[in-house]
Image (tube, rainbow, N blue to C red; front, side, top):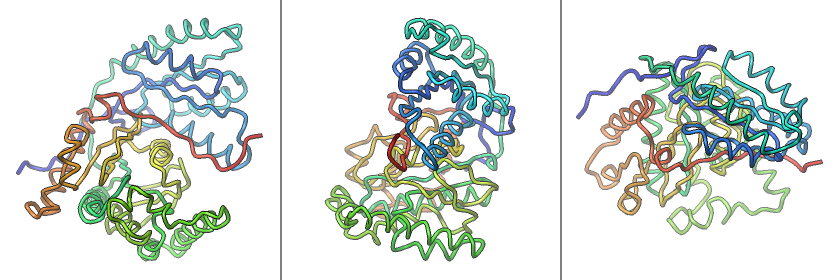
Length: 389
């Protein structure tokens, strides 16, 4: 068995955070500029694109969440530089002021300043993007303690192996991170339903305890108000076909990802938690929205377990795909970054697998690409709370 590593090689940022990747982010914050942003990113090797389509539609808390998410993605430690593209000058200026506080290289490109010509916007974007990419290409990785990590835990298309093997395995990783002074987080708050009391027992204060209970109650009430029967919806048809029978069964498996350490806080979608330890995010259970919330809160990596198979990954935070289902490990051999089916069949202990997985996680933090990164899988999805005006 290999010796478990105690550090990783990361990129030091001016704001004191540490990235495990060094992306140029082409960030379009208006639907009109989305196609151009994709065109620019497609011609800049190594860049990633986030195409936000809603612009002026969201209002109130919905608007606040969207702006929190956009800023959070731009400030994620894995982003070395930002090319901000917009057709809404005031919103671009407001976001640019906040990005500037992180002392991160960035440029703003406005469609209005290009004569409303998408081709001129493309030409200028490529020129600026090449300059930004060149500026961050010279950054070198430096040895970094584990305490600088912030890792999210996700599960999708779960089956019994998720709750029995891969999620408890992530729970051991969560505990190890917390014990090292790092941060870990889980979300998917509707999937705590029926097990929320177990999370609440671990809250560090009565206030956090009540927040956890209230978050689950609000999700359940939202389903009732929308006349949604969670039976058959969560767990969904795929979960049921794979062997999960009730929301309580699924929830017990879900919360296993959180390990056993005290829960420090409950944050909103795309909100960064303060301090080390285990945290919770009150956020949608749908993986694309959940992962974007994590990345916008600053997670450098995501561990993502699946029972029957789920290929979705985040574009900013490398996503390590895990399964303990022997059939899935065989069928999706090349799409999984860590296979732990030996635990499921009794040939290896959870503790042994967790040491191996911890090494895989640190190797990934130091630059080893995940399946999703190699194949170019990934994307971002923004959680919406209401109708657009």
